[in-house]
Structure formats: structure tokens, C-alpha cells
Length: 393
Image 1 (cartoon, helix red, strand yellow):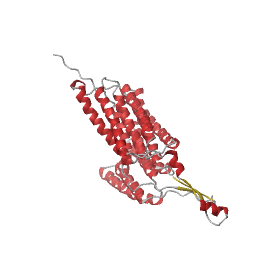
Image 2 (cartoon, rainbow, N blue to C red):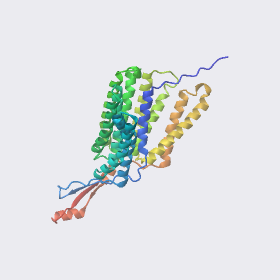
Image 3 (tube, rainbow, N blue to C red):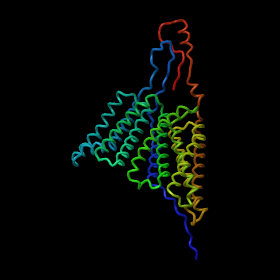
Image 4 (spheres, one colour):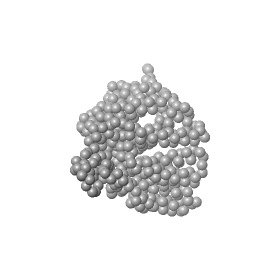
């Protein structure tokens, strides 16, 4: 009687899995409904009085409330625990420090929102940079073998510094630009982790070398911020937050498709990391080409498209198991069917939604308007401020 040998399931490094999960979760967090958080349209007035500054977007109550909410969550999860470790010589002192910092985050952020203009771009980037900077600071300090209090101080300063940097850098950014900036960081960070496993297969056993890798990952993320912002500003098509979400979806489907080539083998950590990274990058490019360039997705439409991909991949797994049989349920055929199902789910979801076509350059030019009455008033030298051209963005 012959025994059937089932192919080994590839072993994926835990650090790589955690990094991908965190990046995908951060991208999915952009799907949080922001019903009252639409950025107020901005308008440039090319008037005869050139000394007057252009009109700036104003904060809305919904945006300010969301900023306070996000900072309060950071206070509960990041600021409070870090401050408790810094001041806590004993349990009582640490608990008191946590309560003071966690509660104070609400009042401090509420007061800050009264004096700082909170746009949707600032909301996205300040929150994202706070989480990422604090996490990177904690990782580097921990891998460097630092004491608990210095590590906690680095985490706290990282969170505060990330919030401040996000508010400053996103002062003139739209929501899509801010989301693309965060996407660039996360994709670069995960890519750096994958390449680290290519360079050092036993990364988790290298001891002090982890400190260097952590610093390299952080540096890659910083470069990713710049790359993401450059991408958002250079593309000739319109870019929304929902479009950025679809790029995360493309990266996930690409990685799943790449896993088809190693599902029937027992690959090394190097091969696994390189294969999944290549698939994710290819999926990102495909999502940009076929989804971002062609459509303008809202957050809800991007989330619905992801749901369609999930439903399709689940069906694909079921079909793969039925077709392959018991001997190859974990094999390439099943993973390949799941990938095809995910792609089919995306296509069906887009057809169902009827997503608006990408506005592109035409929309940008359409936002430029000419005021004939202003031109007449300027030509006749009528006193006062007269708008000739208006550009809403």
C-alpha cells in the first residue's frame, strides 16, 4: 500500500509575516469612514492685489474631532505606557503616570486642534507618522540593548515627533498625497525587511546585527516617504485615498500569486522573502496600471473591491481543493486558483460598483475658471480686489 506524501508548506519568517500584516493593516485603516472629514476645496485667486495670500483650507469640526480621537488612542496605547515606564519606579507610580499621560493626550490634542489647521492630509500623515516613528524608535532602542527607561523615552519622543512632523509636512498636501506618502513608507519598510532575509537568512538569530537591520529598515521607510510623495505629485492622473487602498490590494494579490511558484516546495527563507516581495511589487504596479489610472475610488469603493477579492479567493480555494484532491490541497494549484479568484473578484466588484473614471488632467484644468467681471473691473481700474482666475484644488 503506497502512502501519499503531501508537499511541505513553505515556512515564512515570522518577522516578515508581522511586517506584512502591519503594513496591510495600516493600509486598510485608510478605509475608516470619514464622513465629516472632507477637505474644504482650496481656491487660488490671481487678482490685481498680489500681496494677499491664497485662501487656505479650513479645519472642519469632523477633522478636528478625528485628530483628537486618533491622538487619544495614541495616548492610551503609546504615550501612556511609555511615560509610565519612564516615571514608574513602582507599580503605583507607573499607573499614575499612565493615567496622567493617557488622559492628558485628549486635552492636549483638543487644544492643539483649536490653534492648528487640521486638513485631511494632515490628519492622515500625522497619525501615521506618530505610530511608525514611535514603533521604529522602540525597535531600534530594544535591539540596541538599551535600558527600559531610555527605550520608553525614545518611544515617547518618537510618537510626539512623528505627530509634529506629519502636521508640518502635510500642511499643503491633499488626502491622496498624504496617503501615497504613507504607502511609500510602508512598502519601502516591508521591502527592506524582505531584502534583509535575503542577505541574512537567519536574521532572528544574528543578535547584535538586528540593531543594524532595524536602523536600515527605518532609513528605508524615510526614503519611502519621499518616494511616495514624489509619486503622488508626478503622476498625470488623479489620486485618491481609495486608489492607495487598491494598491495595497494589488500588493496582496501579487504576493499570493507569487506564492504559487513555491507552494509545492520547501523554500529557504531567502527564496520565500524574495518571491513574495517580487510578487507584491508586481501586484502594486498592476494595481496602479489597471485600477488607479483608470478610476477614482472612494474609501468605500476600495473596501468593497477588497471584499470582492476576498470572496473570490475563498471560492478559488474551494475550487482548488475540489479539483486537486486530498493529495495536493496545499499545493500550487490551490494557491493559483485562489489568486485567479481574487482577480476575478476585483473585476466583478468594479463592474458592480461602476466606479467613476479617473478625472486626470482634464479635471485639474476644469477647476480653472475665468471671471469676466473681474477682468472688466481691473481694466477700468475700479478700486478694490478683483479676481481674474480661480483654481480650486
